[in-house]
Image (cartoon, rainbow, N blue to C red):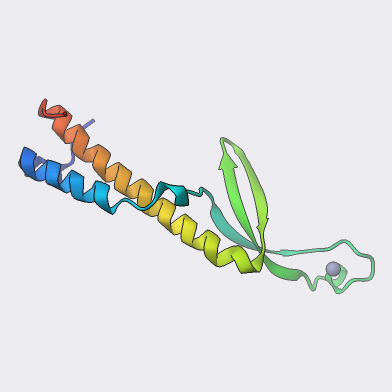
Length: 115
Ligand SMILES: [Zn+2]
């Protein structure tokens, strides 16, 4: 696996200090929540309801969770949608920070400087 060209121009000292900064900026891992929010219109199934004529209920918010090929939807009450959105954003931040730290460690390893 090739190392990041942006990192190859940095000194070992610079790499380590960048790694330290990234680790310090890492969001609280307790925020981790994987998935993505989707909103859907639904039919309730009650006979004679307006949704039977195509006037669907909603939109309702769901958290789409994938495990392997399986995907399921968990209903998210409207009052929790913002909290879930915040957790998802923090999770993305955590993942991209960890990926950046990993790239630095890969560069350090390639130079035999991984501590
Ligand atoms: Zn209905």
